[in-house]
Image (cartoon, rainbow, N blue to C red; front, side, top):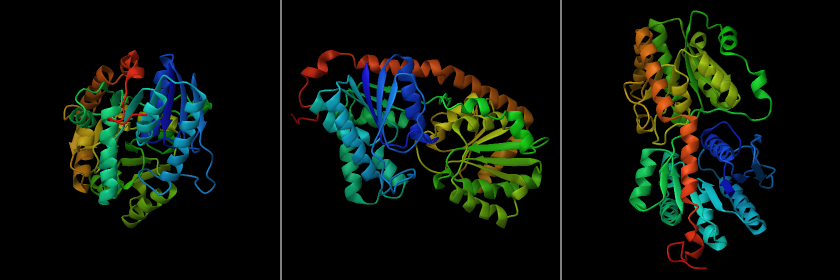
Length: 407
């Protein structure tokens, strides 16, 4: 199949949705499909067979974009829409596959060009507005609520990534062709030769002087909803009982790291916390191998963090905050679930450090569960299943795909 995929994100960057987009196109490539990916001018270009990246024109004053809503998003999204429109005029596609707000574009483009629309729903956009503090602007939230509902009703097929989003789809459109495809462990073959120059886990431990120390590793973004200020403050309680602990914080833009370093300096915790700064996605995986304990400290939100699947496959004991974002995947038999507080995060680490046998047991259970439910083979199979649903040729005779609006 010839697929037009629209991803209004910086692709590729090592963060949530861009990683999911990478996994989708990689799976489609392995299934033998041809993908034209329309995306922002920002990001690197991984080498994936049968995948062609088509970028928007560069905007000189936009060199990066933060996670969540921002004033630059409408500018970049308009350019993505125009690029997608241009591509549809040039070539005949079998499917329009959209991510996030690009689904709103396909609400118009799909019936106009008579191409079925597959909506890849990574989050509920109205709820995302609330998570990022702009949900109180009533008109904007109502517009997003209306558009999300319209897209779910009109899409030929829908992918969700967790049970909460699946519930939203079923409530709005019980008859939707829908499949829940949880993410899987992150693995990369970017074609840049990065893999050949990576340090080993042993080299990282040696560089950080972790011999005889217990490494508690966090990987991911440093946005405020990740609760890393609480993690830093919790170290004070942990190191008093286990002075051989070392927290390794992987990721973070310079200004975000500096904010946390101010807390570290204030509490004189330099000996127990190390910041790596941003590393490549491949190197972040090596840090998982170098860890003794893995930490996911999110303090709000309901979407499952993509890193949890890599955590499980790493076969290391996991601590996660007791939020829906984590409990959709984790249960108390495979991870320690804690309150999203300073005390809770400290108690979670101490529960492992005080009981090494528990660490081994929980790590094994998490790995076994991931092998059974979140394998790469299972992921690719489910991507293939949703595309099989789209091969029914009835769409071209369908009118009013936009809830009664005809062209």
